[in-house]
Amino acid sequence: MPDGIDFADDTDQPRTHMTLRLIAQDPTVLGEDERILTALVRVPWSRMEVGPRGARLHVVDYDTATGRYYRHAAITDDDPFADVPDTTLKKDRAFHAQQVYGTAARTLAAFETALGRRLPWGFANHQLALVPHAFAEANAYYSREDGALLFGYVPADADREAVYTCLSHDVVVHETAHAVLDGLRRRYLEPALPDQAAFHEGFADIVALLSVFSMRPVIERALGPADKNGRIKRASVEPAALRRSVLAKVAEEIGGVLTQGRGALRESARKPPPTGWDEMPEFDEPHRRGEVLVALAFELLVEIWWKRLQPLLSRPKAADGDGRGITVDRARAAEEGARAASQLLTMLIRGLDYLPPVEFDYGDLLNAVVLADAEVVPDDDLGYRDLLIGRFEAAGIKRPQNRVTDVLTAQRPPHYLGINFAGLRSDRDEVFRFLWLNAPRLEICTDYYTVIESVLPTQRIGPDGLIVPESVATYLQMVNMTAREFTDASGLELSPQIDPGTSVQLFGGGTLVFDQFGRLKLHIFKRLTDWKRQQRRLEYLAKTGRRDSLQRLGFSEGTARGQAFARLHNSDLSSGEAW
Image (cartoon, one colour):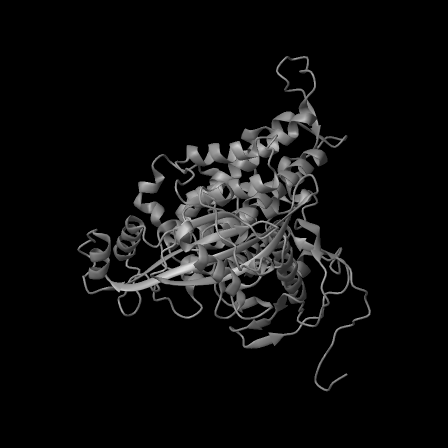
């Protein structure tokens, strides 16, 4: 062994998974035994070193408040914290390390399984650092510049125990989702219309919410006590009852600290968006706008769960004639809830590949999920896509027009002369050659800076077990100009808030989806020359003060290094939201 290097025991043979005990929500949520509710979950196996550190995740337990660094043993045994008292779970830093590692690994695996490939981080490193005690502050955030998830804590005082954000399953999943999304769509941190920042927050909350639902012990607890035969009344699983479930809450413990005991950080799953929400100024704030997505996802989950429960409830009505005497096995009902959550989460994650790389809006998400699901599940026998479209349209969100080209049926199909089909699955230069050759047919204006940002192969598995191989490439277009030059190019006037000499940066781009033979199937795009969208974006940035240090629009929001998500999480403290 080389001097100065401490290797963990490497005697275990490689395997696919290990089983870890994790706090299922946070330490304030108790099970029927009045102990902290925990769950045994399967986490992808990796060779481990001290830290603990695996192939993709590295726990760095450095506490900036005390200046102390703690190294923890590698996670090598299944369920090493079985039967330990609650005080150990709350205070043992080794368990804190296991909680953040296991939860983050499980979240990353959910994305990679749905997308059918390994996912890159949004920074130049293979391992995401997890810092469970980063600072003595009630906040947690992802920092691209540091390549880390930073979790704060509130020290104990005379009136309460210490509160650790790293012990909240919801918070860890939320921040891990930010890191994964940043690796998938790096440009979603650029200054844009409000849907883009709201998407990061809302989607991260959805992943946290559905991740909680995927653990049966949590669902069983929320459904209420069972009788001696393990059964519960039908009323416990009806949609109205499911909407009232404690699972609608996110991050209970840390929310109690930040809102002076008023409850969870977000209860957006209980709040359907009001009519005309997109015109209300308060919904420009990212968290409020993100609540719209969370509410829609929760309603979809309830509807899918209720559909899946029907075979368990399909028996003649009880003697009282209204079916209220029907009971259902609680474990089976919880299992159907977990499957519904997993199915919905997979649908939503699959849609990420079909999003444009820039200038996101909610209509893009609806369109992407429908397109991706149709590729894998052509026959939507259970009508899940219809449910999705109906829920979004009821909230005023519709599939956009003229943003997608079905290239296989286009009147002018693309040329492939001289193109290496294998290269279209992995080579940015080959994809650029294809794009350059076909720019007129794809209606891509090459007057502007154009670059291929990513080329990623993917393999999705459909419900019939068949594999759907694809390759997804994204391209970016960008131009810098003055507000006066924008007016000249577009013929549109800008708000008086924007001086004609102001420097502005504009984006466009698209996503190219190739089939297994290298033929282009779909072109999903946001034209840089959509001048009306660019006008709305610039006027929104000016109105909300989103300028960089040089007072330019569209370049950045002037946030300090590593603080983009910290600022986002503290953007509206009056709403009780601070992570």
